[in-house]
Structures are given as C-alpha cells and as structure tokens.
Length: 471
Image 1 (cartoon, helix red, strand yellow):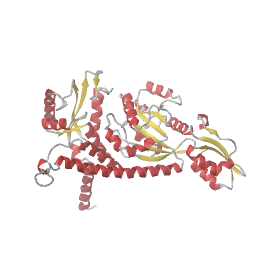
Image 2: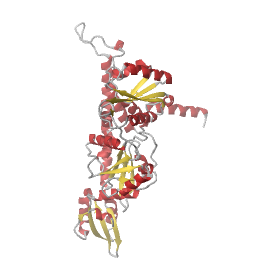
Image 3: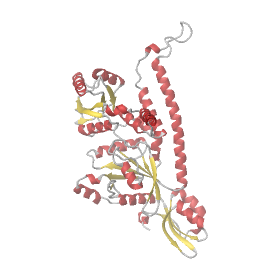
C-alpha cells in the first residue's frame, strides 16, 4: 500500500472516530473518577438514596465506565456527602481538596458518578480547571463510541439531544436579535438560547421520524419471521453479565465479547437449534445499568422492541459479582419501563452465568438447585449447563403448542416439507403409504395447519405439556 493510501486510511479512521463521539486523543486523556455517596440514610447510600450497593462497588463500576472509552484513570475517590450543595454538589472544602487532586494528577477530565445540574457542572469546571462529565454524559459518550449501525447512531444522537436541550446556557448573547416586530413597538426578538433550542428540537423531530421508519422496518421483519414459526428468544441483563459470550456459545456467531461495560450496543439476531430439532431466533440486546437515564431507554425503544415481542426472555446474571442482587433489581426496573414483569415466570428464564468463577461449594449448590422451574446455572465460557438451558427453553416454548399426530400420504411431499418448516417435528416414521409425524404446532400456525393438514390428523389434538418435551 502506498504512503498516500496509508495517509488516506489513517485520515478516514480519525474522522470515523470523531463521528462516533470519541477521538484518538481521548485514549490518552487523564481522568479522575469520583463516586459521591450520601450518608446518614439507610447507612451508606447512593446519590438518590435508593442504591443497595457498597460505595466501593459504585466506584468500581464508575471506573469501569471510564475504562470503556479508554480513559486513563489516574485517580478514583469515594466522596461521602451528608448533604448536597445546589451550586457545586460538594461542600467548599471538598471542592478545594479535589481541586488539589486534579492539579496533582494533571487530570484533564473529571467523571462524577452522579447526576449534575448544568450550574453544578459549570461551577465545578471553573473550580477544577478541567472538563467535568456526570454519569449520564459518560454513558452517552460510551454509547456514541459503540454505535455501529445507522439505527444505533440515530438512537444515541436522539438521547444526547434530549439531554443537551435541558442544559443550554445563556452564551453568545451578542448574536441575539435585540428587537423584533415593527419599529419601536415590537417586543424582544429571538434570543440565541431560544434559537439553539429550536434547532435542537427540529433535529429531534427529524430523528424521531427516522426512528419511526426503523421501528416500522423492524415490525415488518418480525411479521416476516412470524410467517415461519421461529420463536424469538431475547437476552437481557446487566452490562458485562456475559450476554454476548452466552450468545456466541449458543450460536457460534462470533459477536464481540469482552470484559468491558457496554462492549456491544447494536442488536444481533441469529438462529439456534433446540435439542429436538426445532429452531428459534436468539436476540442479543444492549446491556442495562443502574441509574440508566429514562430518555436513553426511550431512545432505544426501537431496539428494545425485540425484547417486548420475544416469546422467551433470558435474564442473564453474573452470579460471581458481589452486587449480583442489586444488578438484578436494576434490570427488573428497566424491564418494568418496557411493561415487562421480570418476576413473572410465564416467559422469563433466569440464567445464573459465570459459575466457573465461584467457589466449588457454591457452584455445586447452584447446579443442585436446578429443579426445572427456577434459575438455570451455566458457564458461557466452559459450556457447563448449556444443555440444561436449551432443554428449559424448549420446554417453555412447548407449553403453548398443540401436539398432534398426522399421517400424510407419501404423495404429499410438498405438505411434508411445509410441516417441517411451519411446525416442530418431534418424531417421524416413514411407512410405505404415509409419513407418520408427531408435531408441535405453535398457536399462530394452528389455523394454517388445520387448513392444510387437518384432514390427516390421526387423533384429537391435545395440549403439549412438559412431558411432551421428549419424543
């Protein structure tokens, strides 16, 4: 490759990184991470008084978020607050103490793991002489760096604009129209902040329309998938719980899986095979996190529709994490925003992942607790428990299917082929004059099945229970 081509490729790479919201310079940015923790209410609590995590766990997660965009974290501190200050969040003494740390470490960026008002952010930046990001801004930066598809980019931009709209401040006043109307009788003209807000709102409306097209397209894709009865299984869970690793284990898809928060953002769908020959579509979605901004959830509604429409939801949990219970609660709260009852067991299966990282005694207890109804313990890395998980998925999908035996004449080859596509063939026996099949018919295929193969039914159909999982 010529030097000219190399320069062009390098320039394109830099431009691409900038479009994604993070330049190569960010990889060398020194940052300090601060986790404010309220004290005096229910012990040590998070900024909103609702967290059940330890201060150290909150700090570790914040450092992980900073590492997700390749920041060089040179300092990390838990700051306990008895009360928050409207102007700076922290007290005067603490602001000065942190200013010394910023100066000593020569940090260019300070990440505050707490929501900041525009006034607080501006005052802290002036006091510390460094750029300040709160938790929401940091998550938006990560999402911007991870988005690869046009859908993902639009959703991130929408979330960022909604966040930015509420943080406009009165700058560039020299660009304001000082007076409108006719002559001296008109009132004040449009201020620059009003113009900025109008431009942002116009862009938001445009993106929302484009996302409606995305939602419509995804709806058409789901409608096409329903014509061929492949049920959809959605993976959900806290970020870095091992969803993508489990996805790769079940599908051999090669999706990026790293020990990194929000390693994957855009949804991926692949086909998987069930133990008795049936097929299903497995969907890997964006991971959840505590204090996820509601407007970010709303922006990703088009992507999360895959979860809403799924036949079975696998809630993947990192059982080796010390805050596994708190993470599970955060996922349940996010699912509730999507009108999904995470505690209802009609279509949700709890998957306790990373059992290879727990001690042998606890691992043995988790595996022994498998009863066909409760959580399923697995290791996506070693493959342990995967067969049990697939059997549970198949049993759950079979609960609402009709089981029926048919004897199709050998001359009806096209019908036999359709039955293999449209239903789950549990058992097949070929005779001289007919093909004898034991089928599980999904509810949405019941009418087409009766129209095309109803005359070949050998006996009255019955509900397929769990005992019908085996041929």
